[in-house]
Image (cartoon, rainbow, N blue to C red; front, side, top):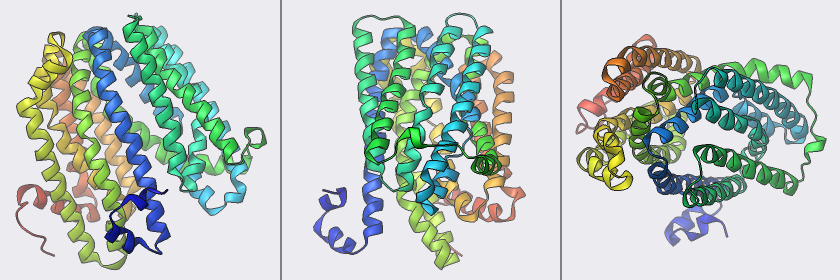
Length: 442
């Protein structure tokens, strides 16, 4: 039974005959289910694992994940959206597109793993060992391209079940490792096991959909098309990931695992609240896109309303973290993570930039400002790295927080003045922040 059938009767009545909307609701349900499961298990098992490992080991594990994440964002070549588009337009050519994507991602994964080997050789223990283990996941992750097929077919249920099954299996393994008092390297390997379980799931899903990997063949013309269209997405993804992980990388490099462990523990709690604006974005994006098509004034009004809502969500999530965060961190992590308890109220303000960054992405998509977004992402990543190296040696984790705030402010607000269409959007955001009680005025 589709998820829309569980909705109240008056909503089901309005969905009669609107098959596209019903499919969208069903896909959103499965995407939300996947994210909520990951959020819950990530918090419960992640906190337990952090208590078991202690701040220093937990910090080095997060350092390895951050390093491999930055490398993988570049070598994965960000061609997913292009492939999904082509699979939608020409489903009969799926074997050619998937085969070409497979070859491209496999080559990128090999290069990425070799880069991880080189990086690991220049690191002291345990960072080097952990980077090698986590880096192996880049190769194991290649079968995830099957997900592009189900994205194009609008079948999120299959992808969600593959990911949720792998997530549950990996977290059961982590619980077993905690109970067995396993060494740190085994916890890094558990992440690779999750990707391996997902790879088995993708193989099963592809066969179920009538596709055999042995029939996929790379094609030179498609390879050239993917490289030409994918490079801006690749560079943008690399910049965004670098900006997101810069604080953890620099903390690990300059101050070691102990300080990074405290920071990562606090950030894990804050990240749970970051799920809320993503849900709002999924619901709001289609309505704002329709308003852009039909009525420019209505489009701007809905954007303004979205920005006001994001401010409200920030207040509702950040205030409890500021007031109760230190107590919650001490309760969850124990006395060993006293540093995380002091950092949590500061990190709560990161949600302000998260909320507005998510909302701004809807504006960027509707206006087609992808190259401008690329410039802002690169500038933000560069500023984040520079400020982290300047501030972390003197201020520690608080310096990393200040650096991230400054870089996100530049990316989301500071550079909008250099693009005509973005200046109007900047006025909407500032009006929603400083005059939230005033309704929209065209």
